[in-house]
Image (tube, rainbow, N blue to C red):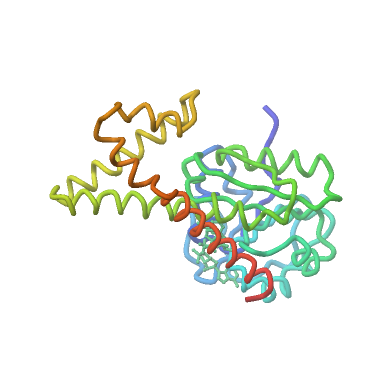
Length: 270
Ligand SMILES: NC(=O)C1=CN([C@@H]2O[C@H](COP(=O)(O)OP(=O)(O)OC[C@H]3O[C@@H](n4cnc5c(N)ncnc54)[C@H](O)[C@@H]3O)[C@@H](O)[C@H]2O)C=CC1
Ligand SMILES: O=C(O)[C@@H]1CCC=N1
């Protein structure tokens, strides 16, 4: 089998998100000896993965650098990291609201720069990662990134970088909205009289089973919803509440707009 992994992987920051990506890569066969993590705490990450608290003197050609810290730290990180990045360095950025042009300005000598927006379920191989590469990126660079991202779940190249904040709102932030929904479903069950722990278990299992079913069905979720609703039955009355004046649709549209708009602010340095 072809070696799908970068020769070396250098992670700048390994918190919630980058940590999930690394967990999955290691579970799928990435040799930990190829991985170095820079993290201020110096805390161990995984068996065999080198952790450093300062930048190395150089990066080997063929290194892929994952920018996994917070977006506002880009300037400080670039000051130390950019001199280490040459043509043989690929940069993969998961920084929300941070356009490729800003990254290129900070890393003028680096090789291909790819913007990625993963979400937390990548740790299970069930995530979504949106991708966008600079127009000048070679086919080989895109293929290498495809191979690296494939074990994480669904990968979607986004043709227009201008839509990156929209996809971030949908799939990057999406797990938080779904977690909130599961919690609200459980609390609503409690509000109508069910024991809290039982409602929590049943809400989670209902969402889990329904998501799995929707993923395997040939029909759309909209059609599946109607299939649950027996004519004249209970579900229809519930759907009527969600559907009245497009209530749920408007709520989610407002939710995505707010998240998207924050991405726009972050892109302006806010
Ligand atoms: N949490 C999520 O679901 C998602 C997060 N992202 C992006 O991932 C990035 C990280 O977010 P989280 O993992 O949520 O945050 P986090 O706070 O869990 O992780 C950030 C990590 O960076 C480290 N760090 C801080 N300063 C550093 C420095 N100067 N050099 C190297 N490492 C440093 C911190 O120790 C921390 O472990 C952000 O840019 C965010 O936009 C993208 C998609 C989803
Ligand atoms: O909240 C954030 O800014 C990041 C982007 C997507 C998920 N977390």
